[in-house]
Length: 117
Image (cartoon, rainbow, N blue to C red; front, top):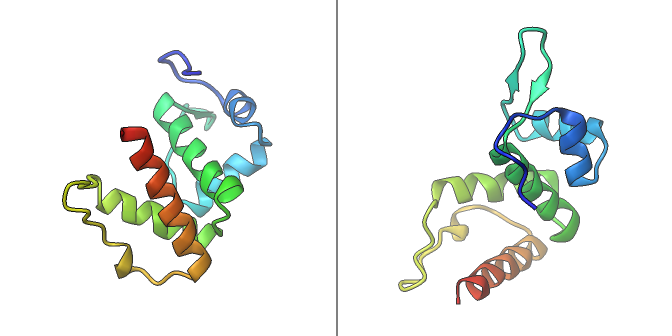
């Protein structure tokens, strides 16, 4: 379900993600996410913010990443904006991961590839 194209508050974001508000604030700090704030300092989020938080939740809760592993993964994804399926080019070799994290990354890549097919 996509939210309307508007700004919304932390409580709404928390409901859509099914997490507590403190979790969102923690993730903002850990993943160095910058959000829009009102003059009074109240946080406002966009659909892009929701999508980013969904990705973080997926990595941490379903894929079994640690905070550190998820940060490395997201940093790598940002650097690799395009995944060239035809040449099968990735640079996951450049970051040091535990074997479990490597398997999770491979699983995630395979699921994305399956969606593209």
